[in-house]
Image (cartoon, rainbow, N blue to C red):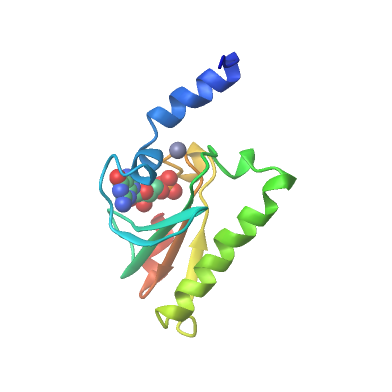
Length: 127
Ligand code: 5GP
Ligand code: ZN
């Protein structure tokens, strides 16, 4: 199988991507939930009492890379946040979802992810 240059570049980015490594279980993480499409882990540096990262298993650099054909996956990421909030019983208490997109918005890991925050999440202004 031969790859074109764009595919080679993408492959190299995935090889160095910390979330891809967590998905492949090459590095450890506290896994909260997992299925064939997504993994949910505890943030290593939590900014609220509950701080989970909802991550698609396919590597997208950011929300900017999402296309119409990915809308089902995008919907699943949001619904997963809602389901977790219900299961963990913080749906009525309130929660916040953040998707940092790009360096200027504070994105530090270049693999699309949703932050799900609850508890005293007012502190999460710095995310
Ligand atoms: P961003 O700044 O890109 O929106 O969010 C990245 C988040 O990933 C940060 O909140 C950071 O604490 C978290 N993070 C970075 N590296 C790791 C890691 O190796 N394991 C876990 N569980 N979280 C990480
Ligand atoms: Zn990745």
